[in-house]
Amino acid sequence: MLSKMKRPHQGGSRLAIVFTGSPLFTGAAGSGESEIRRWIIENDWLEAIVALPDQMFYNTGISTYVWILTNRKAKARRGKVQLINGVNRFRKMRKSLGDKRKELGPDDIDALTRRYADFTEGPEVKVFDNADFGFHRITVERPLRLNFQASPERIARLTDEKTWQALLTSKKKGAAAAAEILEGEATKKAVLDLLKTLAAPVDRTSAAQSTEPTAPLYKNRDAFTKSLKSAAKTRGLKLAAPVLKVILSALSERDESADSCTDNGQPEPDPELRDYENVPLKEDISAYMEREVLPHVPDAWVDHSKTKIGYEIPFTRHFYVYEPPRPLAIIRGEIEALEGEIQGLLGRALT
Image (cartoon, rainbow, N blue to C red):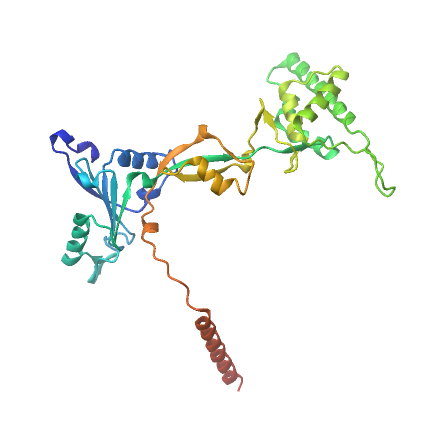
């Protein structure tokens, strides 16, 4: 429909289309739906949205919305979007037609038309800047913190690692495959023997404690990697990058008290602690982080390379009217009255 509008120099066009509520908010930032909303709003084509009552159509009782779009906005409307809440503007039909039980009467149509033309805020009308519907979808990262230990339990995890299992398989055929598998077996045995050397005895202060050697606990990945490579060098063993990676994966556990893992001097993010926040376009991301995030997680940061711009129109939220709960005294009185009624019924039943 937008593609059929006349160009502004030709006088422009105005169109209206009935939608369900989904186009107002469906789709995350960067999705097709959000990008369509962004395209419409940033081009300043969205003039108004009118919320209609539910049960207005024969085959559905859901709520619907009329989007009014134009490329010839009046000067006062430029950069603005008008929301009109017409959900209470209807009259009941004497006889329903399927799910259609409501209709707009002449007075309702006149009232909604006047609300649109007046372009004045009120209980049923809200006016927003285009940017009010936009937001930055930011990715909040936290550092990966791991401890490392060559304990029997962690060493046993190696068998579940895909890279470790690949050492004992081959895509080759015949003698070449057998030779590669034998090489994998040798690497596996050499690595297991190496890890056992890291299980050095730890001093114990209680005779009641076990005398079995306990592997030291490292809370710094670089320190553990250095110790591992040093032990491997002593044995004349060179750890290939994939093998080193699988060892670190199997022997690590998340530990909030451990040092941050780094990559080229920069903190490495923990995928399990990754979070997302929607920051209004009109608000500075750094100020938002200082106020909403950093007081709770001081080590967090924003990965700006993943930031996306999204648009959504939370129509219902803008017209929500808070209704306070009934006083507790009234609720308690009703409960006590019901209890008395139940007791009376039980008494009559027993007699």
